[in-house]
Length: 343
Image 1: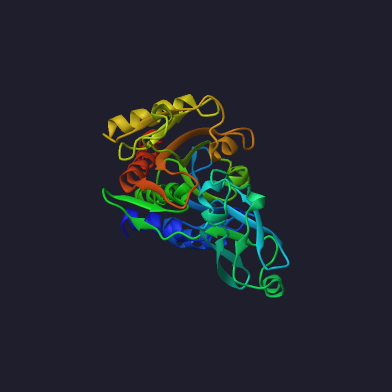
Image 2: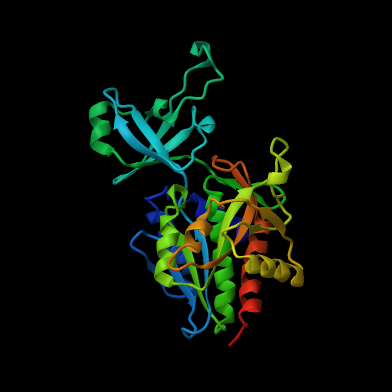
């Protein structure tokens, strides 16, 4: 499986926050060869890639597998659904979108209702989330039989490979990061035994607060962690100083909550191995699992590696497979170089 295929396979799995079971099942299949896997009470997937004596460092590599989506909040008397946010959905992408309702009995296809331009007095207005309706083609009685309040809703998206080793899909935030962690875990498993313990975590609930990563870190009690997520990829209509560029490598983060020494060591590792990288500066929280992991237990020294991504929180997120591979190379090289390699 190529890196592009790995990203698209992961991105295609359903996993709206709080309902990540299918994504977790797929991830377990992809990680099982790297070490024993288990799930936390909140559903995060833990793979114990390498185990060293307790007095040795323990490195946690974490990326989140949940995706943004919606949740059914009401079924009206005509069978139309009302929904609420489950993460930061871009409302501008919703009118006339194809969606899928994930019920206990399977998937129901539907569409987001939209007013024809002929009848819309103000085409510039984007409805609030609670103003959208979803049409699944059912009358009220049948809809209420087949759909439960709380069922998750995701936007339908057919992933595809673009030119220049780029891929487009829903949910590459953060299945692209998951792909990097899986690739790094495979390389580190091949190098075992190492002079440290290594755990890979694909976390739940990042899009709604980071609870999955925080509880997984509390259970594992790592000495160090690297969170792998996506960050803003440059497009002509975005502020360049806040963005990374696709194809120029992952972004190494610096922020108050991140460990300064790990930031420097990640840079040094990239330079030593000739790996492309960019710098991402954040003056407060990172908005990622790094924030939750760093404050787990008595605190964890945490670094951050981000993959540039265009069109974040839309059904057409775009990432470079080369950047995913470079992120995986950086993670593996950092662990081996910093913690002693074979031992």
